[in-house]
View (cartoon, rainbow, N blue to C red):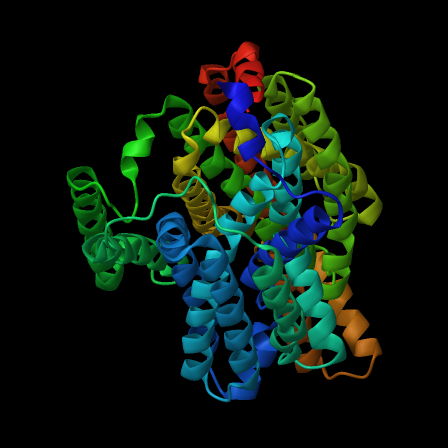
Length: 525
């Protein structure tokens, strides 16, 4: 029987496959790059449109909220409208909203179009993964996920670099305008080469209540994670209110999803044991990926005085090592190497990377970080593809789209939680370290008096008055203290993230993997 049905399954070949995969990975990269590309340009944007530092954060928050709302819905929307139509429409929405972002002249206009851009971008990520997976036969699914994994790792890494280079050499508007020509080409290629999923089953109707509950729950949670640290968490009635809305939304979403057969988000898929563990691993993966990308630039710019462009350029080699390692990992998976072993190896290398960074000092230079970032690049590559593959292993083909959407949503949520936790940790650690250091900086400390005297003499020699020299000496000492407290706090932050990575080891051990299952799937196709 399998011999009769085998010819019905066809995969793109040659140039058609190359163009299809490049289109999908380019769209995924656009979505992920734009999640972080504005981070280094917020100061220039706020000055241009007259926004405060608190208000301008909404440019990032709006994109994150719409992104995490739409990603879990992509499976349902793709099945309802057809993958070709939905993916092409998402590219068009993303491209047009990018143009409008670049043309915005006020804060809330920009925030609105960033929200729309996130809706379009979220439709690209999960669909890009299913498109790439559908372009390869089952025995090469590891390679397909490796290709998609390259985009996931390189997107957040290249975003700040590209944003810094464009802002420094042109203007912040071009971080959005650059998407337009790429998006136009991607839309044409998507319409020409993307096909509908033959295994997709169109829902009876759209689950509007499920979408509403998802927006309420996920949107509120994302807001809490984005804004919680700046609003002092539970000391803010606004944060407490949105936490309540998030809990209410999730409770109603679960109840709705389990009571109908056309749910917007099919939570019944979590009956699959590996999908549950895969979601835990994807959450941890997002936490590590986005957390380390978030904390390192802050560390080197505040404590070591690096520029934004210098920081971004430094992180490129590590991403390139990921890109080189990904196909190797994909080939290993295709050859039957146990994915659990590969994940453990990647987690071990990532722990070593973070522990090495946790011993940074004021004399650390770029040369001290190259090898740790090579380890990070290889480690993330070893974890990414096997985790993506194991998350959807054994699922019915018609459920892959929904499962991929859930996995990507959980990974994005993990990144948001990771950044929120690191922010909270650094805030508390900075206060703790500063309190400890101030005990040694007193009027009764001979070392403090000698240091202030030396700095003051330096300013006097440069022509400043006694009062000016004394004030500048105290400011200089305060600056030294701030840099040292930040350095100690970031070292502890790297160590904390390293400890979080250790959670991966027991979770991977619990995954059910039998080599013979892979052979059966391949033969069945």
